[in-house]
Image (cartoon, rainbow, N blue to C red):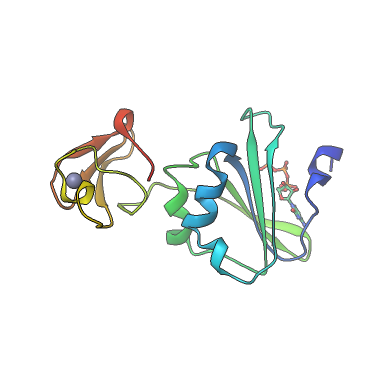
Length: 151
Ligand code: CTP
Ligand code: ZN
């Protein structure tokens, strides 16, 4: 281990979510519900990274996520890597995949959509993952990558 990795201590068991874009750290925390659990959590942000200028890392002790939970962060942290830690060793690495449905993370691009007028959770089906295109469950308009706004 190089010295920079010791900025946030190693954990014995749990999940390390690495390579999160720093500007989306707190969004990832809230999407995964980490603000509502009692597990030990440490995080670091604005760390140096070869791949990202400013990366963040979250370490959650004694917690292993389901793939469908982790995939919720794919739109805001597509570069994230999960490291499954058992007895201090990384036993598995996982990448995030864009899910087939996106609930409550993205704003509908259509200003007339009911989700932009009333307090309704947005819901989209993913019609394309390569060039991201999300079809609104309510107004059926497509929100594309260039118009993507995170709520
Ligand atoms: N880690 C940890 N606790 C452990 C083992 C690893 O917090 N007991 C963290 C490391 O600090 C690192 C991440 O888990 O941030 C992945 O560990 P490792 O695979 O050893 O690091 P890298 O090879 O640098 O991984 P990558 O190439 O994915 O950045
Ligand atoms: Zn809509």
